[in-house]
Image 1 (cartoon, helix red, strand yellow):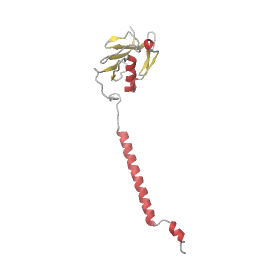
Image 2 (spheres, helix red, strand yellow):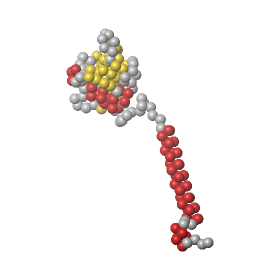
Image 3 (cartoon, one colour):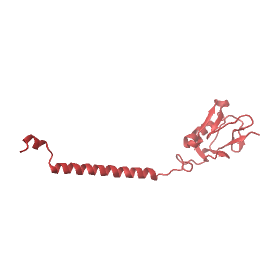
Image 4 (cartoon, helix red, strand yellow):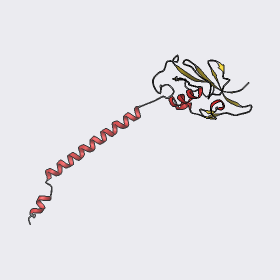
Length: 162
């Protein structure tokens, strides 16, 4: 019994089948190798958010530096100074530079008040609350109006007010 001419034309030859199989195996091998190296490069990357700058390094004399004393121990961050900047603006920039500086505040202008920084919330009354100093002097203004200048250091403390 012989094959019909149509069947002979549509049936792939052994040579074509082997070529197709070899190409398929080659493509699969390339995909596996690429996948292996992609996973390897992802698992080999190690970051330490506390020590890596989030952006360009800013000279403290040209920017505004924010730091904490005591609990919590946040990384010191120096942010770019801009004209008319107040403490709240510097705090926003610090949060953008390092997510550990995450904060919540309420009010605006001279009634702006820091409520929470790095997960620690004001305790009110005789408890611990957020206070800040600019260049070693306890602030007498709201963070929403306290101006800052290039080179200033804003120190945040979670303490009982005395």
